[in-house]
Structure formats: structure tokens, C-alpha cells
Length: 460
Image 1 (cartoon, one colour):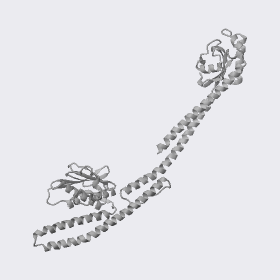
Image 2 (spheres, rainbow, N blue to C red):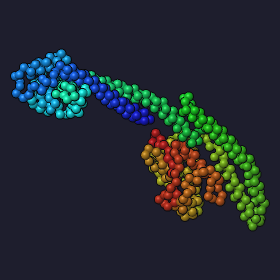
Image 3 (cartoon, helix red, strand yellow):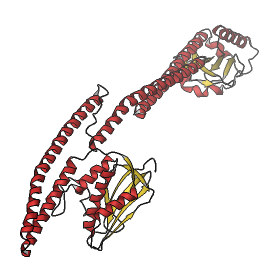
């Protein structure tokens, strides 16, 4: 934003300065040219065409030449100009106060002013462009004809362009003024940028917090402009999402509570039924199937309650290797050839909520065990990576099907015949509470690899 405000201002000021300098220079050149041409016209009126025609090469000692040179010298002194030059129509010298052009010699220096000479010969006052003399100073010339429609010659008045020093001073003022304006614009742009980008950055962080599920923190309305209006609407959205989230959690908790009580009774009656049918082994298989279904429903209820009542994380220092060993001990299947191993440095310490990290890892490991099969391989790993702890659970199963990389983290989405679809959604929520997200790709064992990160503990 600073560049967007500053760059057009720099370009506009530069163009304005260049235009102002060019206009001022052109105006001063025109003014000096007109004054010099007017002075030349006044001198030309004092010179008779016959006098110019009467002198030529070799007449340096004639009275006519002496009178002409004296007259133009007096005019030069009276007007305060640098030089007065008389030339014939063919631009040969007829008198020069500086003595640079001899009588009858060509005035080659006037060749660059041919357009102005033609205008003067036609009866108009003409001033030449600016040129630099041998002394390194700027000068201009004014031209006027001597005689009528068929001029006998020209009067050339050469004067110093004193305005050039004023123009240089004007240029310095333009540069100084432009610099001050740029400083002012830069300060103003910086202030406007901070005034706009500061609230926008905080608004963006608030939106990210809402996206992570942090709905309890209000969005501050800092200004009364469009950004403040946006912040107010965002806070209204946050409040509405919080209310809806609370209603959903209450509904899930209520449903789970109402279902849990009958399930306890069903489990009790299934136990009594198993005891009553102890003498009928063929019926015990049916009772076992009922008990399995009751156990599945209890797991579903527990998943709903955990998802609905998940508390905010309580951060602490967590020793990584012991936590992974504990997760593997809980999830390790009995009587199978499946390999379940831990890969983690013994001194690695992470910052996080130990209980929630434990739940997330258990969910991931259980899914990996199912995917790996009875003789597969599951690895639970953690390592340091660019200032964070990277947690991994990978398996040797078939991996995640293409196109399901994001869907599997959606609540209630599952590819299993019996599943709530809350396990991976629960893992994603825990990862986001720890400032990360869950990514899934293909691991070195050939199956799926789930990864998320947490901060390294300060004591690590």
C-alpha cells in the first residue's frame, strides 16, 4: 500500500516539476528574445540602408564605417547588452562591437539561427534559442532588419541570459519542494498504511482463529470505517457460530446421555442372558453378537461425547517417547503378527495438551492398525523439524484413495461399514488447537502417513 500511494505521487511530482521547469524556461527565453529583438529594431531604425550598402571589404578607415561602429557601440552601452553586430543580407560583417567579425567577413556563428534570420528579414521580430558562449555562459540573440521590404542587412543584438540563474534557483526550489512533498506523502502513506493494515492484519488473525474453532474470543471493532463495519459483521458471525456450536454440543451430549443409560441396561441384561444360557452353547454365540453390538454403540456414544465436550487444550511439557510408548501399549493387538513400533528421540519434549495428543494418536494408530491388516506394519514416530515437533503415524496398508484426502477429516464421513466418522475429525480439531493441521500422504512403508506438528517445549 505504501508503494501504491508513494509511486504515483513520485511520478506526478516529477512530471509536474519537469513541466513547470520547461514552461518557465520557454517563457523566459521568449521574453528575453522579444526584448533583444525589440532592442535590435530600435538600433535598426537609426541606420540607413545606404550606409550598409556603401561600405564593404577594405573600408575600415572610412568615415561611414567609423560612424556605424560608434553608433552601435553607444547603443550597446545604453541598452546594457553584451554585443551588437551589423551584417549585410548575405550575413557578412558590417560592424561588430566585439570585433569578432571583420568587415566583409562571413558571420558563420549566425548560421544556426537561419529560421530566425528569415523571420527578421520578412519584417518580424525574432529571438534565437539559448546558446552558450565561449565564456561558458548562456546567451540569446535578437534580430531586426535594416531597410524596407528588401532589407539591406540585419541588426543582431546579443544579450546575456541572466534569467538562467533564476531558472536554476527555480529548479532548486522545485527539487526542494518536491522532496518536502515526498517526505510528507511518505509519512502520510505510512500512517495510512499502518492505520489500515494494522486492523486488517488483526482482523485476518481473528478470522483464522474463527476458522480454527476459537469462537469464544470477540472480534475487536477498532474503527468506524469500512474495516470497522467488516469487523462488526465478522464478530456477529463468530457469535452466531458460537451459539450454533453450543447448541450442537448440547444436542450431541443430550443424545449421547439419553442413549448411554439404555445401553447400560442392555449390557446388564445381556450378561444375565449369557448366564441363563450357560447350558446352551449354541445360543451363546447370539448373545456374544448382541454384546458386540452393544459395545460398538457404547464406542459411538463415547465418540459423540468426546467430540461434543472436548475442552480447550491445557499446554504443558510432554515427553514424546514415553507418550508414544503408552499409545502403542494401549493399541497393540494381541495374538497378531502385525509390527507396531516407535521412532522418537528419547530427549524430545513437546509443548501441548498430553491428554488430547494421546487421544489423537490413539485414533490414528487404531485406523492404521485396521489399514495395515493382520500382518502389516505400523510406525508411530516423532522428530524435530524446523523448530517444531513433527508427529507421524504411518502404515503399510493400501493408503488413502485418491480424492478422499480432505473428505476423511469431515465429521461423520467414513469408509467403514461401522464407524462414526468422528475419529479423524477429532484429530484435526486437536491439531488445530495446537497451531497445526493434519496432512495425509503416502509413507515409506507404502500406506498412508498422517502428520501434524506442535511446538517444541522451551525446556527441550
